[in-house]
Image (tube, rainbow, N blue to C red; front, side, top):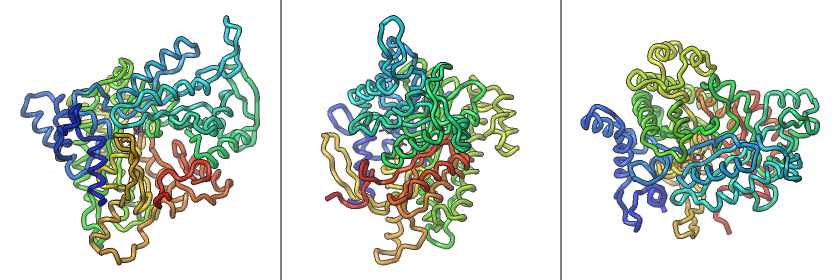
Length: 570
Ligand code: CDP
């Protein structure tokens, strides 16, 4: 099956609008683009002609897969279905009482049913064994409540053919943190959760200085252990089982554009969106691979003028999603409309590097990335300020507090001046999503800022009838190279894949990207199985030192195996 046929299969299964009996409404991908463009232009005021003008501009931005709205928008826009166009939610802060907890379970079920991925901080639940007044029993603790959420998720299949995804975080000072770290080591347990420990700056300092670490709940200290022992437990579990991830939560809050009016304790399932209680975010990615001209030649370059023209249009599209989308809960709608977060990112970065003949992680690639990301960030903030002048700033915009934020202080003066004059429509603007499915639809470009996973590999695709089918998938840049130079030509050394890169190359790219991204980044650092435990731990310390907001690694191992196989399974 060739690259385009596979892309078409995924589009047909996931995003093609069909009637309930299965008859297609979208006859082609162009029809899907037109449907999305029409739906997102519907909120423009000024009459039919204005709406038509925007619809044409939006459709042009979608053409040739240059802009890829996230999956929920592809699947839901213009369909009249009772689904949300938001990929990401963090649910309300969990109350520490049974009645309230089950009310939150209901909210989670409703959100998943409409297709949203959800994140939760379980740190507000009292630890296992703590007394429960009035019933003469002890508390069962956050991890046992996670089992309840896990069953709910398995039961409520998310909208369409997509399985539900959840994130659970627990603070590094919660008394049940050790149980949390090891919970997924029981086979079949908590399989619908990604898990991350929210690590504080105080904890990282205690590890560094080899100090004791108190586990506390509501001011009461339960016990103390060596910070280094706890860190080693987290690291060992991650080394052997690829979980839990680590989130540097103080950094997230310190750098949040909205630190003046919200506190963040959790992220969405893949980590690119740290959100406050009931926070919601929609995503969309510019496909950098589609903007490279004269690939593989000495003249190869990304069309920066086209990029700068594209950004304001797609910022407007994403901003419109907030007014078009349904919301599973009133609180989520209130949050989204008060802050108007959008998550504009990129995909196909590694393909764009290859097409420009730069090796992922090399100094040339870093220079290119800085140029491209500066343009995206600046144009996105300027566009959001322009929309504010026309439609109003986000309701919780506080000019003085916003301009004092760390990300905003680092913007070029000319951008800050425009924000000071016009305000800003979206409190947070940029984010790097995993683009797991949409990058396949766009001809299997590399995902987000990840390196190419493999130039050819096999993927199991779950068909709507429940059967799994194995497909060979060929990377976009590789296919383009073969088309131009034939099968016999040796691959130049800038063709590197995730398995052959050094961890430092992954880290460099993540850390540089983070400098330009106001929200967070979904990134997995792939490591060879033989990586030593010491080298493994160093990656996390380095991620912290370099200013990353979190760190996720994957080392193939006998317990979890490989996520995607590069060889057909026997
Ligand atoms: O490719 P697509 O736009 O469908 O999604 P993605 O970029 O791979 O994932 C973006 C976000 O969607 C994730 O971080 C999750 O919050 C959510 N998601 C989910 O809830 N369930 C899935 N099966 C996949 C993604």
